[in-house]
Image 1: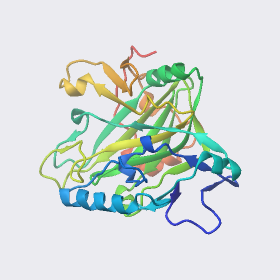
Image 2 (image 1 turned 30 degrees about the vertical axis):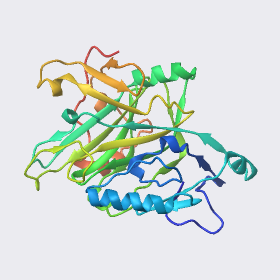
Image 3 (image 1 turned 135 degrees about the vertical axis):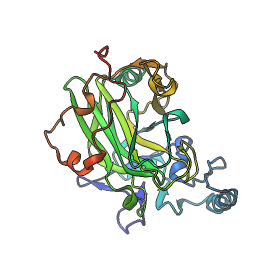
Amino acid sequence: IVHGNEQKDQRFPLIDGKQYGVLVETEFILAEFHFKSPVDAVAVMGTTKEEERAKETEIKELQGKESTIDSSGFMLKLISQEEANLLHFPLKYMSVIRVGPELELMLNVPPGIPSQKVTSVCPRECFANALDSIGATELSIVAMQNHAHLAPSAVYGQVYNHGEATLDIVAADTNWAERLKKTEDLVILDRPIPITRNTSISITCDYNTTNRTTNTRLGPTLQDEMCFLYLHISPPIPDLYNCWHIDESVIKSGRGNECMAQCGKHSIQKFNLPPGASNWRSSTGSTTERAALGKHWPTLPVCENSKSS
């Protein structure tokens, strides 16, 4: 995957002195990236019917071309695995997990609010089931990207290590208004982030709705909102394509204290985070990322309960 224009002698990103190819199964291409691939069935997104029709026309023009690009700033170069092997690209087979709310009640911000943090959790119980399903003890996050619309002030992910009681900030954008002026970047990590049975991951969006007169809810248009963290993981687990939680205290207006996570096609998991997890120390001891987020961190405690082990 190449962001922006291709360089003459560099068709793939250069990381640690090596060029890495990313083998993409077109079946799993995400609509939010607006990739146009040379296949008949693709997802079309637009804020209006006219925009959707324009995108459909663009797709038809792009179909059959070897290299495709659109206004999102992403270029997708399709090559066969055999060609990649001849070029000696280290191949990593990946799947994508979308972490973030998928239920409107879990992203519903009233108007006139200068700061309301919305956090969605993918708990360790989901990762434990996924690891068991492929007989593995560890996954690696090799790339990540966040996604939201117009209302956030800041967006960031967090990786919890329950065994060490640490919390690390990832994929942080501390000034979302400035971030919107740039293209969306898929960041290939210099050092992959491990996921084990003791890992939970969350995404937080801090919303400012002072210039709005109606509730801001989960939805596809730019006046609606999204709050997603895309994790590109290896080895792939296609059945764990999304991961998000439902909090009884939210959907039942304060009645109930259980949290349940939807783990793609895997079974729904009840879970709680340990008390104080939102303030765990960094694994490196650094406070730089937290200082940069300022008032946007820490998150309000989410699903923290003394029953958690």
